[in-house]
Image 1 (cartoon, helix red, strand yellow):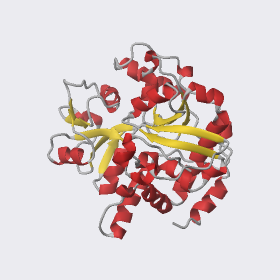
Image 2 (cartoon, one colour):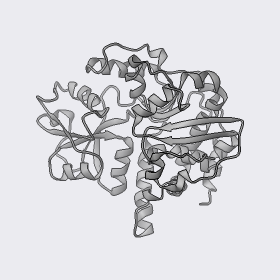
Image 3 (cartoon, one colour):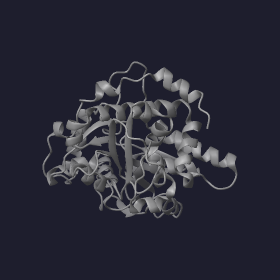
Length: 355
């Protein structure tokens, strides 16, 4: 179970997670640092793993801590103040020349986390149609910015000359920017697009032509944790894989577990409407998970060639001066042990789940 975590962000998130009873001591423990301020659908797998009992079965106890953003989470992991970051890999890549060290050991998401969305009825049909347009981003420091620049380079379009970035915030602010035509498209990330699905605002999407299927979202462990807590990392990886299988088998149960952790995510009003909108969000985020195949031996493995291309993109876009050694950014050490799961048992549990 989650331990009680006392920190400023817990006050903002409400008492639910912060007020849970401290777990009994277990043989393995980890501190997980989430790269967001409050519980969200992006960290659904943590909540499923806990509530479905996967962590208890692994004799794994851990704290979940929230922070402002992924770079801050990476700093805490690298400094030894947390064991594992639940983050995308940009802070790992961009922090290397600043001395930040860690290794991604499991990737759970299939598409590159950042891509472009346009309203479903938009006349835009190709990336080239975005020439002369404004593209909304959460802020100019977003990791979506270099990704979009790279995408638009494939149609010979340069930012500031052939199109413009406009800070348009997230969700409600982005919807307002799209409806007012202040922007023709938005460049956000997977969990934000899941929120668009929840509110029923349909979008069409454009992914990076080369990197679109490179998963950059997962678990990053400090080098100290890799060395000193290998069994705990195996347990965490297995729990995440089991959580993915559970969500795919029973999205409604996953939704209700999510609401039990984050009641603020449930829309007020008609329960049936709230459930329908919640399922849209869960099913969108679920669609982005890697699909587990029974008997699979390499689920979650970091795509080393894709990582090489992704790091090269950052260098090409002028964000990196020097390429960090790719082998210093990930490890395959835990692939075999994390794939030792009984998928049939998890599916049975999910089908029979009583909320």
